[in-house]
Length: 281
Image 1 (cartoon, rainbow, N blue to C red):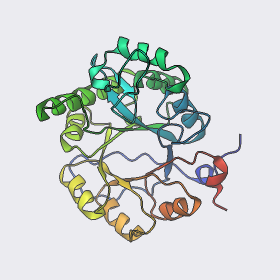
Image 2 (image 1 turned 180 degrees about the vertical axis):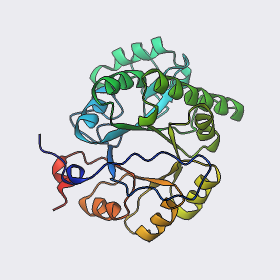
Image 3 (image 1 turned 90 degrees about the vertical axis):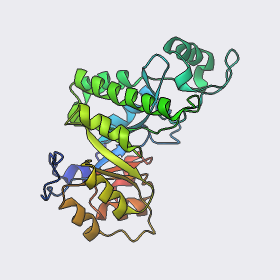
Image 4 (image 1 turned 120 degrees about the vertical axis):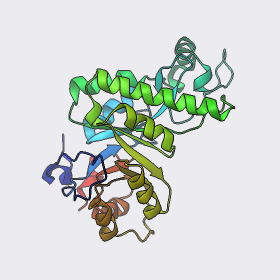
């Protein structure tokens, strides 16, 4: 299989998070490319946020990004949307209101229309086949079936605890990144694991996001990349000297990928899994 050009020539470094925000420069990052939603959103062959899609992404790039939902049974499932699709025997609901058994029945009812996959299955596969690769887990504080704010916090804590439990069980703590705009969730993960990397998610205001990450001793930020934004390698390097990392999403066109790589991010998420795109000729 044809290799990714800039991945082949890159030298990979191991960069652990600075626990007490000591001013220390991290090694130059060899940017790791992650398949957005596993297989890349819009992939015609492999459904996004599924076990098969995750397998495909892991086989092609340095790792994958997956979106998470939690069931009423406390199990972590892959899924970008908290709302579930209708089927002949079920009306639309949300993950947090469905038990695992109900989700499996819904999966059977939907047939080829939609596939339901568990995070643990991906962890098992990765531990056995790609123990050196990475998974970034996107967790959003959105539970339409949960009205009270207290319940939302409780749900987020359950997700954090289950991520840590699975990472420890399959010895993948150093391979796992979590990204969220909810600080309490990231702090919960940090309190349970010193090795899982925590990224504060931001849509804009790069410097404000980095300062927040520094204040909370997070690993860095997960940032929405925009080709027209005045973001410079020098600015990124300023925060690297403070021990902070950068994850960029979702970078798809050849032009955008070229511009993003100039910033030397630690991780770059893309829907463009086609390897020819990454030759950047």
